Image (cartoon, rainbow, N blue to C red; front, side, top):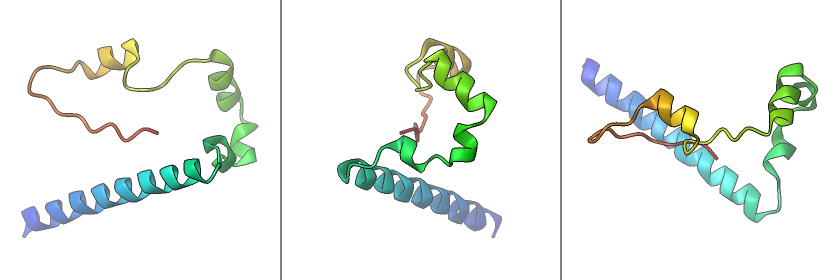
Length: 82
């Protein structure tokens, strides 16, 4: 029973990721910018302002992220970023 529950949880997570991706594509095609969905209270936070000011990319192609993930042959990653 535990394996079924685990698979069901993974399937649900994949479904949520898929739905989120679809929403992002729909927003993009509709002219909605990702930044439009960020609450103002978060945009006003010190951490967000520092992140934006640093102009640091946070995608899986960045060297520091590759170093952290340390991909090896045979490993599989699911990049769910936008």
